[in-house]
Length: 290
Ligand SMILES: Nc1ncnc2c1ncn2[C@@H]1O[C@H](COP(=O)(O)OP(=O)(O)O)[C@@H](O)[C@H]1O
Ligand SMILES: Cc1ncc(COP(=O)(O)O)c(C=O)c1O
Ligand SMILES: [Mg+2]
Image: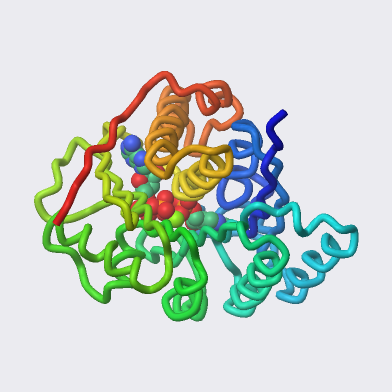
């Protein structure tokens, strides 16, 4: 029997609604991965409501919890670490130490960094020191990096002029450490208005994927967290990077269709659970080169 993969997921928890681990844990479990959720913050709700209660958890919790898992002899079973929304740069550094600790026991373990940097206009609030940490320190340790366009722009220090420019910006990141870069949301001059586009860039090739852009009165949050979580889960389940990319696009689209049909602001993950596991839609990524 094939072993069920184990994934340590270090990101935000919201009590109400879906962002961070509250967006990614259930879908990753639903596709067949054992998830170890470790929360960086515990907020009442995601920050795009403009107000929230709760707190950033102490960075010492991360090594303490990792050591607790080591003490029961289970740390070597960790196949991958995912990091997302962070409450402080100190938490980020504790995660990198944890990743090094896990890789020392299990050299095959993977680290996916979703560099959540915030988006003040959208209301996604992240401390500046976290963005600096992601730009300067996290990228070198990450096997996979999953920026959105704004985050890709921050890594490149500029905005793209075209799709091929986005490709060049993502490819340049491969030289800084990651084996693959998944750009979860592209935006560039000349982009067709009716599509939602993503890129996967690896040493073996690059692919572009387009799916329909759905209309929402208010953009749902947690889509990026869902995307990076499902991508890593499918890689752990044995998919190629390309297959994981295409699966993720389809499963996320199914969630958005369900969310749109319910006229909901929060992602309808529970209602969409069968569609996540077995997407009915399929999007083919096309090879793209410079
Ligand atoms: N198919 C789609 N149609 C419409 N909006 C989408 C679709 N897929 C994703 N979105 C929205 O696109 C935005 C992507 O946000 P962005 O900031 O680029 O990435 P992230 O989700 O990582 O923060 C989100 O607001 C999400 O709700
Ligand atoms: C607490 C929290 N976690 C995570 C996120 C990231 O969400 P997304 O997947 O939309 O990037 C946000 C965005 O506002 C947030 O407030
Ligand atoms: Mg994001």
